[in-house]
Length: 415
Figure 1 (cartoon, rainbow, N blue to C red):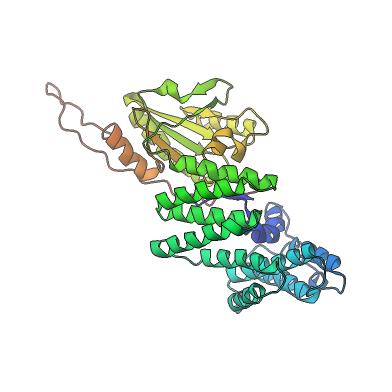
Figure 2 (spheres, one colour):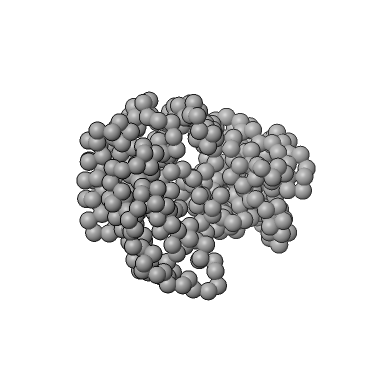
């Protein structure tokens, strides 16, 4: 599952608890009729074998809420995850190793969700359970507990506390050296690198992406290996400032494109999509910048992460966007799998990269006010005082800085 927003967008394991609990909600949210009330018996934990209890857990997670108001959804989540916890407790230590891993993971994810919706006592219950699992004699249980322990701490770290972040990074990198190369551990590694990036600790973030990409590339799980390539791309992206950016592909109308053709121009490379609320909210700013600066050597190259070509072309026709838009013509490489999104590890949009006249990247965050400032630095103020009749042009008069568009609440997008 990927969620389009200004924040990082991923489909790794930490989102599994939310995805499992909210998939039915997301489906029903678009339905015209109100969901039917759930029979209370659906939450009753049955007696049965480990396989039967795990099947119950799977079913109860998919139950939709009776309403869409926040209190109703919260109450529903409490019932769902309370039933999951009860089922796992009833299962106890029975079952195979894989069944136990599924059960323990289900309870940990349920407790994570209850903590997120701030159910009283859930935090202590989570910590007590983690402590018990860490002391479990079964060899495969403590490593599982460690993953969730790190995830819990990750959510509590203040990104402004760089010393604590550095210490946590060291702990995670040591953990990865001996951990199973699965989706859960990849998620922790990725979230750690992403948090370092958001905290402005670029050097450490780059180290994290490079190290973790190399480690998880050796996994025997193809999905993990594929996501490890995204970490490699994220490292490549963070390394761009001061260097050229390679951008090649096809435009939405099928023409070949190479960024080198725009040599000598100041270029904004904008990763976006028509389904991304913040991306659409950013368009007035981009259009205004383009209008004021295009004749002075400014170009925009949009890289669409849409899956639906017809939707994109309809949008472009309606909005009359004047700049080049790239779209993958490979049906298996659209959306988040667009070759350029993969190459640069793009996991959130909108994302703007500004390239100077020499062809080198000068910013990885060229949006809103920052874009106006960057263009003023690279090209000049957006408006020049017109010359009075019979007199030479006066001093440059900067235009009032344009505010960044307020992001709209984006829809959750399942990939």
